[in-house]
View 1 (cartoon, rainbow, N blue to C red):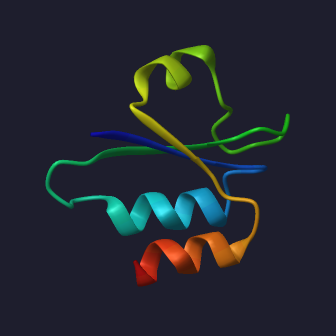
View 2 (cartoon, rainbow, N blue to C red):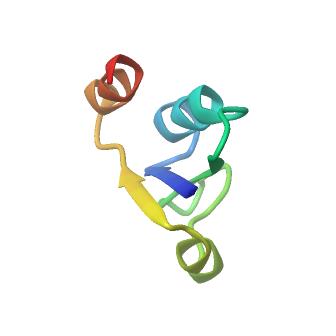
View 3 (cartoon, rainbow, N blue to C red):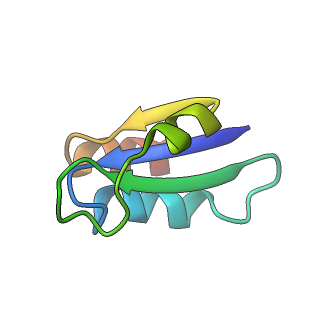
Length: 68
C-alpha cells in the first residue's frame, strides 16, 4: 500500500509518520507539506501515486498512528 502523510510544512508531523512506517512490509511511504515553504511540497503526482492519504492536523494524529 502506498501511504502519503501530509501536514503543513513536512518538517515534524508528516515526516515523523513517514519514518515510523518506513521499512514496514507492504507499505511504501512518502510525506509532504501544503505550505509554500514545505520541505517537500504536495504535488498532483504524489496525490495520484498514493493509495491512502492521511492528513495530520496536529501531533495527536501522529500519536494515534503510533498507538494503533
